[in-house]
Amino acid sequence: MSLGLIKDVIQLVEEFGSQNNKQQYSSDIEGFKNWICDGRINNANNVINEPIWEGKENGRSPESVISTLIVHLNRYAKTYSKSAIADSDFNTQEEFIYLINLKAFGTMTKTELIKKNLQDKSTGILIINRLIKQGWLEQTNSETDKRSKVLRITDTGHLALENQMEKIRNATNIVTGDLNHSEKMELIRILDKLDKFHRPIFSKNIEGSKLLETVYQEYAFGKN
Image (cartoon, rainbow, N blue to C red; front, side, top):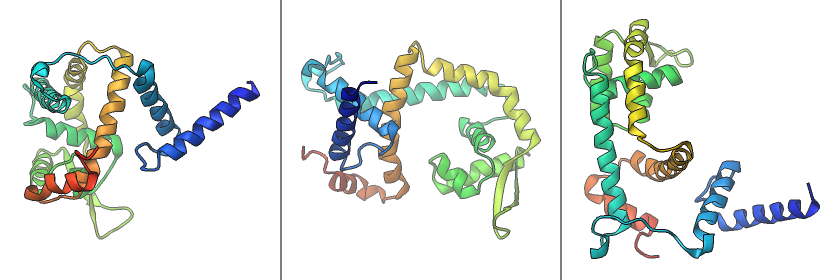
């Protein structure tokens, strides 16, 4: 490796540090790569090949299109998920998502499991109680804090998941449509960036009537 290339890389890292003072990107190699990728896209001939969307000629904003498409994709995904559990004892997609999270991440408290699925407490408790009644979950004493209870997936729960996993995998494959591997990786990067923006806002449980005003003021929307 040439000394010149090393100097260029060091200079690039210094630029990343100075431009990332608002912590838009994580201060690690992944954040550095994302910063480079965004810069490459934005600086390529200073031209962005904008797609055509319905209503664009009448002034419909890209933000409106993105919001609508996300809503549509959520509905499509729910439709495929319903099909995946149609002939099973699962009532909703949330039920098998709760089980999948416990299988993947191990035991956790009710609160932790509900937060993992970004749901309000009352809805989450109903789902958990249903899973316990089915015999798919059980509460046990925490190994680290004997005063608290944690949830674990039972053998019956594992079996219920396994019986549906092929259909569930088929549903998730269909949701990604005809995207190639590169497009999937780019979509993951973009959606992860959006998730990291919205998750801390969501976790604050801001009162509904004050949510928009609070977020607009805190993140200075519309002032660019």
